[in-house]
Image (cartoon, rainbow, N blue to C red; front, side):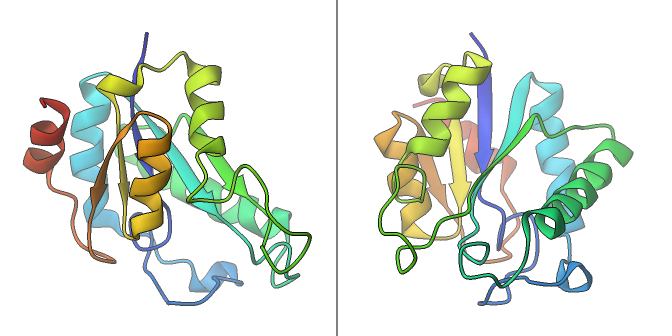
Length: 164
């Protein structure tokens, strides 16, 4: 079985603007996260993005614009010798069409990734900047780490959480 670092996107991998990032030019990658995540990648952890993107349902941006942002993120990691195995996003919004199984704090995206990549939840962790990220992780049997928006990920903290 594989092990993974699940990552929220906004506020963890790119700058949190406290609104939807609707334009590619507003997507600012937090480059300082890459070395820590590359170290975990080099230890055999899959890097998987798990992100709510309700702005799609609200017609604030398109799936094509989202794909460009995710390609920019992947390119930044590849340039530093790491890669992101997958991007899971929920395009739904509770005010448009009601509830879904994928929008965090639901665990649907994480469970889909666990199934797709044969991941052992007990050897994996989810890093997010909102309580719903940890809730989604816990619902899938994955430990969660809550950081402040744009806070640097601590390698030591990740390893400590994984060791318990």
